[in-house]
Image (cartoon, rainbow, N blue to C red; front, side, top):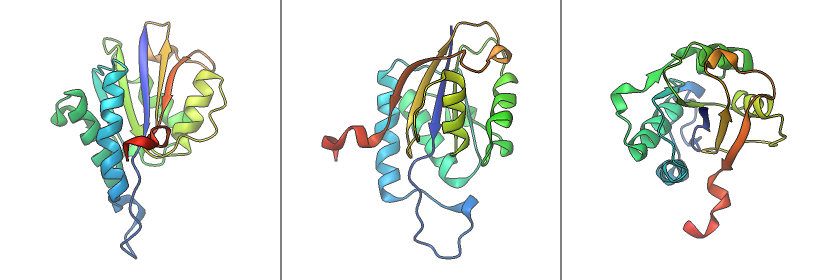
Length: 167
């Protein structure tokens, strides 16, 4: 069974006026949420063989923090420029290019693409994946290129605001 973890980057900061979207860093809340959600992902038993992330600053930082929580080598994260604000077709093309020997894949990106892909793959209405939200999806297939609309089974949908007592 293949497992895909779709991760929306953690909350970004808007504090620096004039800073381009690509270069926005994580906010204080984002810096707190990312390690917590990395631990949550580890608690779901995630062991990705590959993490692919958008190179935007907030996504890069989120991917690095999540990787650390999972014991995944930071230097092994693949930053792919096409993931910056990518829509479903580009995300699917990226996933289809992953070696089939990789059983678990984590993809760190942006909305609306991440939410749209999760809904397309599972056939479930999730509404909106909030910042640092993670959707786990399982597939009964041998190849990442076999993913089709509705072919995934929702394993979990977790996000920071589901855990208000931790703050």
